[in-house]
Image (cartoon, rainbow, N blue to C red; front, top):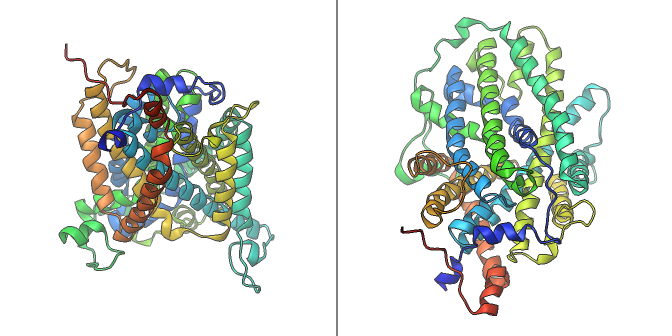
Length: 506
């Protein structure tokens, strides 16, 4: 059984599968498109909300350093993603990479994890977008009834019509074509980045130097936790995370990591890229660098405009401008947040459908979902199915308590990809690699350790929910995926087991 659970899919076979007419996706994306996708999905609520939260509760003005730490963790993972995406230019991101290096069961685990990550991420972002749009509508004098705003009305019924409508509209755009999605994203990202730059440039004129003192406030131990809400590292080792001080910066980094979630979605579009060997590394690393620079700039400006202990947790940028006597900026920021969340939602949905499509094409999920649209050459069936499910989910549920599952799912994917790079270097040294992760195995090992540390700083309750989802996934795999996979059918037909190729010993 162990040989079948860890059977790998050759990279050459994965690439050949993408050329089958009924499964072939249209190649239309450039390096610029990928970079725009990355910027579009990374810049969201993090830059508008998390800055105030971690500055006030964890790091003070040194929140800018927390963004740098989180960016470095993501950069380590991005180097590994860049090598895999350029070497194995197939839809599915970490799922496909794991199939080529670790085997079928690990690939299924990471694919199942990504389905959860992207689904919850899309729903949470849609609900957040709805909140910003309702705020703008309220300011204009237009008020939605409670039962259509996600709040229970007099009848006891509540459905967030705006959140559901957004998901359905974006689903239609993704069905029509990824190039249309790229064009829509380009326009929206341009608006979003413009708003962020306005905040940075305008806010720089209101910086007060004294607000940066002390830059790293004196360390304060957090209250000890004994419940499932406590970080896992605290329950396991008795370690108490620190607010402020040097360690407070690392505690803050585990929080602001939410702001970087999504750059790995770029890798899911490898199969739809014109020149993935060249463009995937540029898109992944370029988008991460741009967003890290913007995050650091915004955090420096907002903590300079208003003293860190007076910052708002819900709307730090808007309130900082109000404190300087310029409340009209609040409307500009709300507009930028609403626009920004549109692209985040769309690209997360795109990433999920590509992972689902890749798993279906491999037979681990029903192959009905692996047929592409005859005209648009997009995976329309999983896109429509998942779009409807997520629209319903976003309409009826706030999902605030489940948001951290998105974070743990991403970090888990980082760990798998980093390990996979080391293994594939050993098992397939002959593969052409247009981009090579530097200092292997050092960089992947550091990436694994950094990701695990951030995971341990997540609440134990998040780990419990993640474990439950994984148990369900194991059930689906052993009841369906294991016997229906293309590799399993190949073994039945040829009588030969599929094993990883041996490394070249010459």
